Length: 631
Image 1 (cartoon, helix red, strand yellow):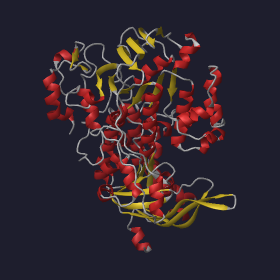
Image 2 (image 1 turned 180 degrees about the horizontal axis):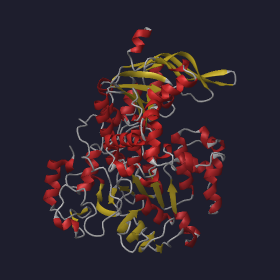
Image 3 (image 1 turned 60 degrees about the vertical axis):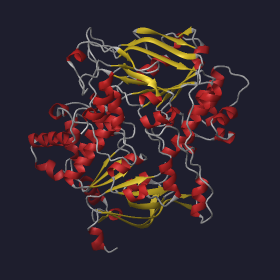
Image 4 (image 1 turned 60 degrees about the horizontal axis):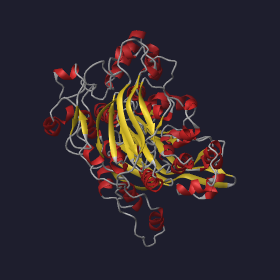
């Protein structure tokens, strides 16, 4: 491609190799990458962890890891050869032509600076040097209004911690747009967000793309998001682009077995069961030009246990963070049961009280009222120091992020052996615990940094299971994993529940994963249970308005992606109301009684109940017609 042609492309990457040196050996991180993107197009980068997605995204900002270098090829962005830019030229390029929206905007925002000051820093230097303070503030308000942040004028004077995760992500997008860049790079911008917030953020990005006409590059392991947002997609494996083209063509008719494997690994809310994981043997054989062995294609459907004893009983749980005399409790009157071998999903948006309830069960948070019973007979003391060693052993936690829950300076043996030493467990070993999670005993000598993301999560599970618990609290344990790794972890959960009679309280915001693995589902909103039932009942035809909002916000691979939350419906109130239904301010079926009277428990079946004033016929029919205010 000629230099003139490159100038008319937003992105032009040719024959790119990125490498680092391991002793005297050159190791390629990216190899033979060729990509072109026109202004106004959106490119999705997909692939497993370690495939080179984030490295490729960083290159667009002329950013490489310290030890990496360009071994071959060229990278032109907005007409500039980015790795020939130096000093002021490079700073001007990053300030005006390309902008990044990171995965965790909350961590990227400066906690000690007000939003107004952070936005002002992001304006182009020429704008900032000539504009008055009033003009800069007006421009900042305009940006926050553009990303639909409520009350933008007041928001300017607040600090990042005063906003929800979804609002912080909107502010991060506003900062990226402040310099009016030609290209916007988004690195997993919705990973970790609940489904309603995710749908609203993606709707905002789609609208901004249509209004501003900028090119965008979206890094994501969520193929539904790629399908919704991107005009083109590039699939990376081990640093190579194995397939690329228009998104609809690639996802509907994938030619490479790796792409087909990724698509087959995606769980779906309309198809129960755990999908198969990627089969690397099939993919490697294809790339060597050999005859392909048969790949696993069966979806595994879990069977719920019947008649097993309870491992956890919660009655009347109330938690109150309020220090003022007035105000409703954070969690109110929660009843919950988990039986041996059962997987119970606790779902809801961020701020719904899921983690608060898990912390109470783990003894990390005090309560205002309620009784918690372990194994049907032992009443749980409020906090860990007051619990017997046997009780502490019986309740274990698997954390969301294995990267931060494992000490990077301690080996796998040190991590897994800790509960064995702490509880004086005899007749078990680290190797046996690793075998339980399908890891070889040789991994005991490794450090966490020498493991993949899925392997680190398996070590976290091994550490919890090694204690021999009866109840495991699994907090968002697959939310940051690739779909293929996610599938293998879900199958591991199922096997451990069945073989060891472990009860799992599975906290998640991913409803497709809930559909795949859960036996029962408890839907939580502002610390109140609004619906509970078997997984088939929750995903059935009768739903609480809030459950329907969650279901309608799910971005499914292959759907028409026409729905998005109406303005304001993605914003959770600061706290529950003192009276009435907690969902009244967002409900499409709201009545006067909803604002003053606590909703009754309405039995739909022996195992399914909904807390709502609306008649069941309305919950079956009206919501399907009104689509809960989605437009």
